Image 1: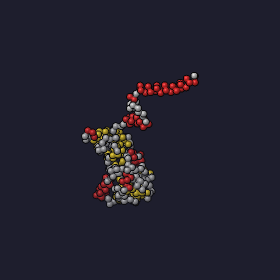
Image 2: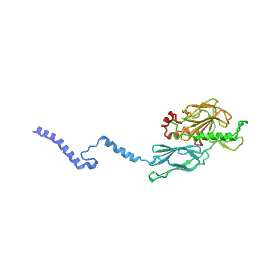
Image 3: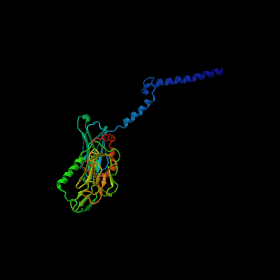
Image 4: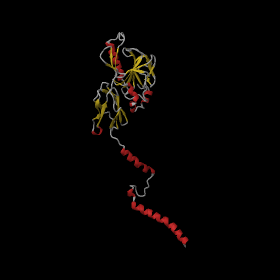
Length: 340
């Protein structure tokens, strides 16, 4: 008798648990979970809820980011703006002396480079990105730009007599126009792909933006840096680009100008030899010439200059990699097809 009762209790206990569980589920109902009656959530649905909540929390508004965040006179300034609701190109305005590059759109982000004149006074300035169209595409972004103070080198020196013999104002004006045109011709997109490298290892004898008084004449600013090295030392291109000028000039001597795209160019003067030709696509690290002392020079050195449009900027800043904020991987296809 005890054995039979024990067996009955053994079978009744699971049945009671099953009934109790069913009554609890009926009481709670599908309303508490938001699922339809009889629905069992699978792993995919469980994973969707956290992703949706994260997406809602990380939605960002349109904004402007500057690289570097606190520039100096003579710096270039990379502008990164977005995510933009419209792909139309807006206007970019600023109230400090300088020039802006072409504007690059990548997805819903906007990129541009501003060359800040080395004569800019330290102060707090404004930068505005705006577009006025229909209400759904209007845009108004503002960013304060704090330009710091920079102390520039000062120097006095004399040039040997006879260096400028045979020079004429007309010829000098013609060469200045050649240089201007070479710097103005540019690809609308960046041609650099990797980090920039030094064109030459050597001692810097004259800094960028230096105030120089030559033979007692009025002060002039130095638009690049001078790097001393032995005559014949190879000079390489710091990054990919297109040769826009390869010629012998009066003041600059044997000169090469490379377009790196997006209104960024680099210039190499006083070369002893030129190893490239106009229109040639040149790779990073490829030899463009050798160190010399041709033109207005007293000893073997390289005058290396970097410009945003026609505004000279500090060449050494390109090693800070601020330009790599601009997406440019697709430029490889343009160069590989010989696009000029």
